[in-house]
Length: 242
Image (tube, rainbow, N blue to C red):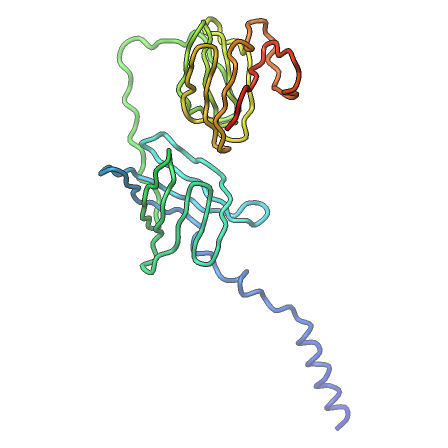
């Protein structure tokens, strides 16, 4: 009898030591994959796709495409969840009872509602071959990320922003970098010029006012580091942020 009880105790101890799978880990994440649909604003609709993945740390991230706006594979954007609501930078959404995704995209001060279903974007049409002679660029300049900012030009200098967070000043003659200024977020809008000053918006939430006169043509294109220095040769010096 004692041996029987001892054997049962051993078996019970062994069962308690076997790791039990975490239910949250074993359940599939219904968001993972690609969702497509339409975003709407002012009577217009644009095709949009969200793709959810897990990064190397197991955290959920989002990539998005808006073909009509030339936004392709934008991301990764971290996804957070509070109850039934998900947030990912400009995106706010939730899973609807019909197993679709409904939410809004905040863009340029507007909230664009969207509804998405599981599925991929349709294949893009093949580009139409160009007829006639093809022009060659006089010069090109590579930034650290995509460029959505239109350029502004004054005094033989072209100014523009980049998704790498920089505001650049280049020579219109040869594309040589004259200066750069780093913001805390993407610079997607066109800078505005007003006399000697340049105004630019950044996704870090700030409006920057820069002195264009500090971007000389002398050449050194080092990032700004110490804003308290009195002289700023070949640098864009921020006069004001709000």
